[in-house]
Image 1 (cartoon, one colour):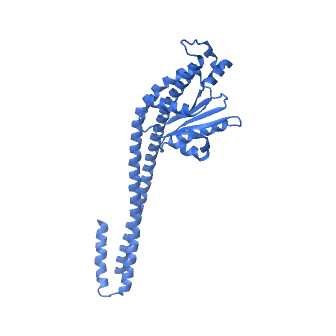
Image 2 (cartoon, rainbow, N blue to C red):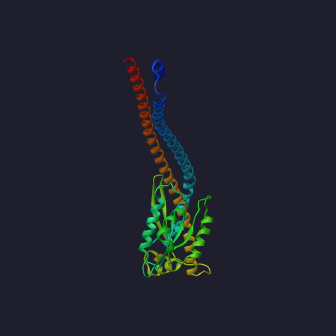
Length: 324
């Protein structure tokens, strides 16, 4: 209000100056154009900051919405993942989980997400898979990849394209159940030859914590060989097989069932870890957007105040010049 009054006062004082002493029209046009340029620069600077604030505010709304969606999906998957742990634990007790077993044909099953914006869970799985590939490769060894998820495929295809045996994406487009994962596991077993399947995934701990995990599923031949050699699988010989099936047929069925159960749990655990990591990432993004919005608001206020101060100085200087 005071600023408007000063502007009116400045215009009122400037009018008598122009009438008795007319100035050169060329000089007048140059002065008016310069005034437009300076006022335009001031308005553009504040407008740029205002547009940036609007963009950051919209991004903050999106990240908050994505956090809520991830929290809703996490609640739906977490219960199923916890219930699925009871499927593979009996197999671990019976057949064991021997990551240090030395075999010739290794298949690394890397489970990742199809979408990003979920922190570093996919990079972690890929790093572990590459480490296992390097560890189990050699002149007399063969190591292949089976990839579940778009993100791991995009990373591994850069340097290990020839070692990718099979890749599948869009697993979580629809809610997964055991039947779908069992069909998926059956396709993998039909298309690859293996002595050991090493499943790499992220085990869910909490919303802010997940543990990179590797589960090992041995082929029936390796299980039988390890059982005859004693060690952790030596107790298998103490079981009696009833019915007409042989020991190799029973081990074959057990290995296939174990792989499908471990796969089902691994896919659900990784999905939980993905949603938890996405919640954390979106929460961090929302807080960063809020901090940036505070800084932009401060910059906008300073720019606006500087513009007002400059205009006041010009008005006061003009009034002082007229009085002098």
